[in-house]
Amino acid sequence: MAFITVSKKSIVIVLSIVLAVIAATATAASVIAAASRDVTGITVVIDAGHGGADGGVTGISTGTKESDINLSISKYLMKYFQSGGYNVVMTRSDSAAVCGGIKYNKREDMRARKNVLESAEPDLVISVHCNSYPISSVKGAQVFFASEPTGERFAGTVQNYFNEVLNSKPRTAAVGDYYMLKCSKYPSILCECGFLSNVGEESLLITASYQEKIAYTIYSAVNSVFADEAQTQS
Image 1 (cartoon, helix red, strand yellow):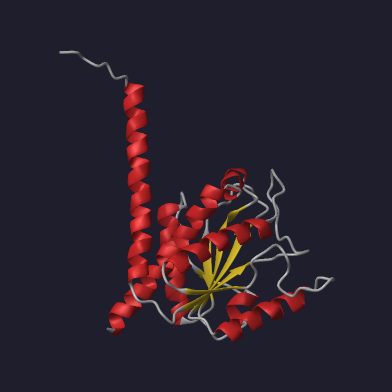
Image 2 (cartoon, helix red, strand yellow; image 1 turned 120 degrees about the horizontal axis):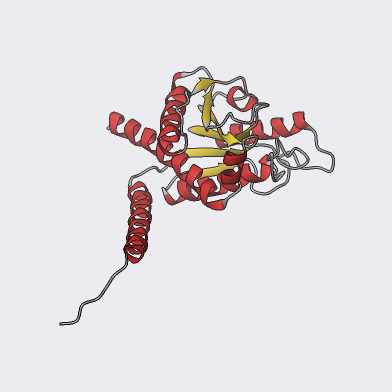
């Protein structure tokens, strides 16, 4: 009988491939399970922060604009919610400002976003942003909400998921004094997905894989809240 010699390196490679396949299968199964649940009539507005002449903050090393990262995360988020059967409305789906026009006006842009919310009458608004801070060691994803119970519940759940999946140190969801949280009567959360002023976090935030990871984390958390609400009402 012949004997085959297998190196430790080969074993590690094979195990890595197997684990990757398992992870991908689990992710796909989760999306399929969500799609099988009836979420007809549930509308989510996804707001990609900034846009147009307003690029937001920039990466400390690469100069990457926050607005581009926000849009990429938002598109992944839209994909997951649509796969889950939700009705999705985007405040912007390209690099242009929401207000349009030749000359950018911040006040008009924010008013245009408010108009999208009022037209959509959503069950939840998710505003996507990246953060910056003068002290470059500061990092981590954090969720903000207006001071109302429904938004707080969504924010707390998303924050718990962020702490489990993205953050090396836990953060706490907090009340935020942001226009997108206060401009409408609809439950709203604002997700600061990481700090572009931190070199390590910036290097993650500019990659498609991490952007998609953020989006799936937000989607999973929000989906779990809607699932709990549906079970409570049944």
